[in-house]
Amino acid sequence: MLRPGAERVARLGGLHEFARWPHTILTDSGGFQVMSLAQIRKLTETGVTFRSHIDGSRHEMTPERSVEIQGLLGSDIQMQLDECIRLPAERKEIDRAMQLSLRWAARSRAKFEAMGGPGKGQGLYGIVQGGDDAELRATSARELAAMPFEGFSIGGLAVGEPQAVMLQMLDIVCPLLPQDRPRYLMGVGTPDDIVESVARGVDQFDCVMPTRAGRHGQVFTRFGRINLRNARHAEDPRPLDEASDCPAARDYSRAYLHHLVRAEEALGAMLLTWVNVAYYQSLMQGIRDAIEAGRYADFVAETKAGWARGDIAAV
Image (cartoon, one colour):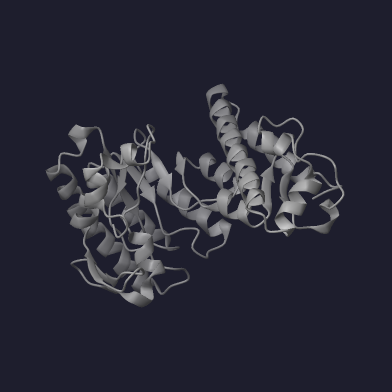
């Protein structure tokens, strides 16, 4: 919205052309930034006014403007504007934010249809809120399920609550959402979060975890998480995983990767990010294959056994 600007991106052919990415693009609505920029924004029934983190200029984000921006960007999967709050929070505050998000969902949907989104092959997702309150989550899910969204996001989780609470909310929400449309758990997560969430009916995920962990010397492998900053890797000639299809995991020694991380070389962050993205892709392919074969429970047990067994000599 602020840089380079949605209108400019639209003039340049939309995100697919601008970024030379021919595949599916999903955009968020700005709701998470409403939470993360709490110190420089004001929220009302109409929307959110905030100051730019770039130059301090004042802007307004409404449900309608959020959908308009995503339409200008040309994203394939778009999100309604919602209010996401941090946990723990008082029930009264969770309820207020959830009800506001429902009203914004209806406004977002009306704007999306007015812009012809469905006719362009695009989809708009409603976002389930309700914090860690079972009753409020159920209310949000039921009311959104009655609206004609192409898919449904589950927001406001992985924002400070334990994994057990997140999974409990999924146990409540997923059965209430339509079986014939995707369910998207926003901002999640670790490999363990993903396999447990899929078991509860989640289809889509997004998270900075693979890239952020890579920048900080952490990699995810079939042996579990490995911290390349640890001194025990300094003279280890083995690769991270000699059986991996990823060259960064298969062809470079742990000693070299450790050196790059400790020396703060940009190549270290690049290689470890490559390792993590490749592992996540492999994990998701394994999940899809196991579901197709009707052996998902066995797949989860085998995967977790590998993480638990680990690579004891080097982790």
